[in-house]
Image (cartoon, rainbow, N blue to C red; front, side, top):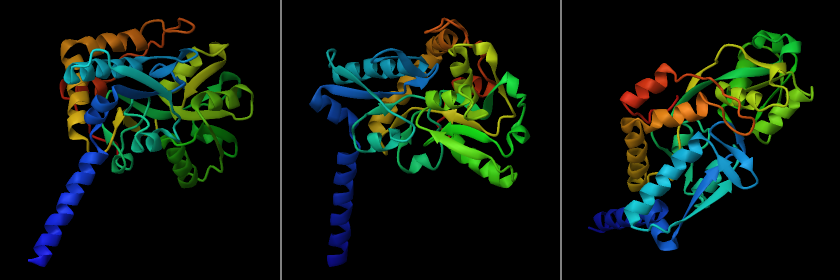
Length: 294
């Protein structure tokens, strides 16, 4: 009897702790505020058009979630706050409740899935290299024994480190705080290439002072899904976020947003990325999935 009572008490404590740890909608209802994260240079997903003014494809997805939360909680005047995050601090800030949702350029993978939950996937990409055309770098063998930049806290940095060891390339991999800083390392000649998700490289290149100086090269080392991060094991909030995105996909609004940010001219230089939707993403629209990369 004592053992059974102890197990029951432990189960009750676990249930209470879990509910307290992951009930975003209750937290938002009590505070009257929801806080979204944004990235400062993840073009065209989440970046700054001006001081404190985040824009992008992922920002629009966040705004759609905000409208769904307002409707769900019957709080039309809900305060929507925005907080900048980096690759390094985005997960801790979500875990400690500083932010409620992170829609940027975050890969949905099994390792991160131990600490956070992911909404359904909204993009697919792979690690490639951005380099100056004058460097004549075309693939990974061309960066052997040279300095290559990536961004702290990204899967790309891990992929490049493993590839460097596996292929014995003896690269000097330097990690920058954010994507814009890593791009500057190449622009200034302190690195010969920047290893990152190809879409982010295209975005940075399109907004460079002299876009024609750069090119994105190399085979994609892996294909990974992007998804919005939310607190771990918060089933009610995840359902609301997933239902919001599925609704956008079924109505055709998701494809309109894609066209706006990936095919048409975008700020700040009004240059288009001209990146048609991938087959992986089209399949995901037909059958929405939150399946992570391994």
